[in-house]
Image (cartoon, rainbow, N blue to C red):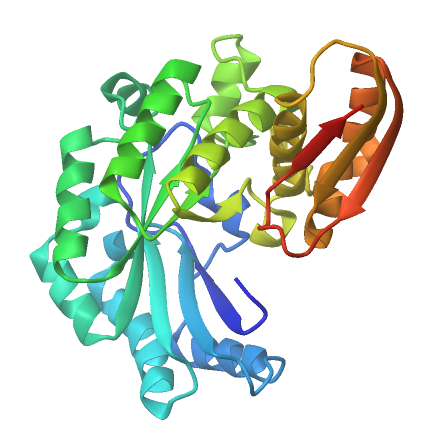
Length: 337
């Protein structure tokens, strides 16, 4: 989000979901073990509002963590009433929540509309039937497609979450899911490479040798390709990888591509690929790379990783980096002499 758009996160516990997806331990992921009430939501929103500049264009309350529309309906309405009251006062501009595709129908969407909900995120994870079954999702791909159609019919903003690296998946199945996600034309996407969280079935599968998680390198490579494809399709990607700020840290993650700067590493990998596409193995006296000044960090990579990679991989005598703020973000001009 830009500095003029702000999200006030409200983490709700994993209540009411009868499914036990292999990757899921919401108490660890959200850090929430009990329910918030109306007063606590109001207090939390007020606390955030004190830190948000008055010039903010857009402020939204977002209910994260559990499958929101799967929890007790009375509890849903208690939380939503707090958000709606803030909406009616003009303190916020919208309400968003995340849920499962099989917890969406016309009745649910009717009351979400009544409570001022503006955006709904679906935990899709995969559109491959084999992967959905192996992950214990409890629904098939048709349920996802029906939920997407309904949400669009009601004109909510649509967000979709995908998880490369699930049990039973392959690069081909993950990329096929991405192709289908693009065809569904969501307003935004989150990319969450699969992590092995303690206390999950996936942790047991990993420890018994029945699941091999993505390495950090594999996670970065797959995520960079996915992010590139979504960027080309002009679909906004608002998150790449779970962040420590979302309640996950090294203590909870047993294995998988977890890094506090995961997105930056992924974006740096995309930049490196763009440079490499424009050079060959012929000796280069001077390699000049021009980017927008805001892309300098991604071009260099963490701890100058990309520059070191280029120097080690190709016969280059000198690398010169130039800034040109007339260039579109993510664009690269490469001159090899």
